[in-house]
Length: 460
Image (cartoon, rainbow, N blue to C red; front, side, top):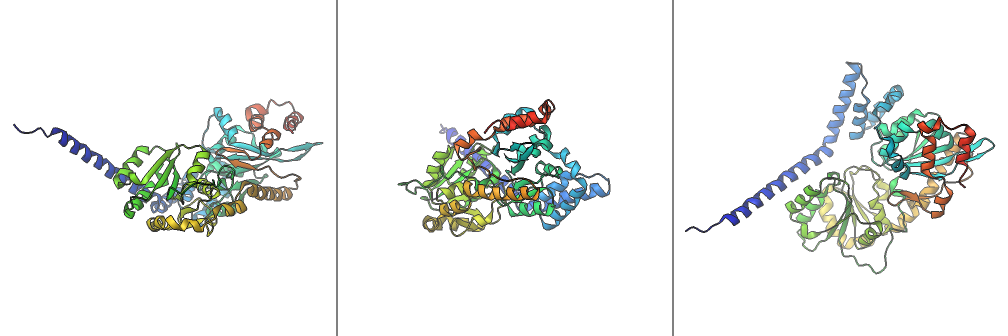
């Protein structure tokens, strides 16, 4: 009688299936990565050609193609072309702004903060300052807020959450031509684009990276460096985890330890796990998920270097949270979104992708030569950034012939926007109250301008 080999055969079949899945996912990620890097130029050209053809042949202006061309691959030519077209089609941008439901009011209020109350005396107004975080928050203002009235009482400051400012969710603010609006822009391409527009959007060279609470992220005494590197990431392929896994496989060092701290965003958790097995690096990894900020600070303190491997994103915060924990950063030279001036001899290194494996190895000892916390305290702390913002707003006030007698109060992103000093929350107007006051549906019911001013003057 022949022995029954069915169990071993089933195991072999399952292993082959598992390996096939791993290979398919690896191929998929390679293709996606190729599209997101070298393919962006050709996608941009395709959108630009579509825009020109539609305009010239069908006589229909499709701004979506024009804006997409610039966002995918900005060049001096596309910037110049967009700026020229914007002079002709500003009024058509509203149709491209995202649609958001009115029930998002409370979420929008959480992402909006009053940094200076308006001062209203004898009919004269010294404007307050209202700051809005996250690009996806802006469309609410376009749809539901009477921005013309809001801008009579507040300077608006925008803090976009993603690089690529040729975006209708940002550009619709250009229709308020008589009011200068401040836009935080750490990516130099975005800064130059807004300058080239010559609109009412005034770029400033700081962003979400400049509002980290250094009281939460700080060095902790007596903590040993147990991990060679840390990557604060999420389950989205844009974070390009495969670059790290590939470098670890090539390193062939079973003792090299990398911490992955995942947030809840993204839907590629299963694929990432398959890639870990594909490269056979699970023993090199320690994985955490959705850590509170204090615990994240502890893990950062236990790590020698912090990684950022994305090609494009917003003004990344995690690399600078690590700075305040005195952990240097390793960022790719071709990253779009991070201000490269922030990565210097005190804070870390800008590297090519092909250098990653060797840099990881060298950082086992090289990390001690950096002192990022001191540089960050001197240059990008929320107190320093508040002064920069106040000076910029003061220039705007002076240009518009308005008063400026008080500076803004400091805020932090921890992780949502909040006041640096708890007492400021008690003295500043509540953002939900202000937004409710200026809703288009409510504003028409306000009996008089004086009634509006009484509400705005009520909290001191």
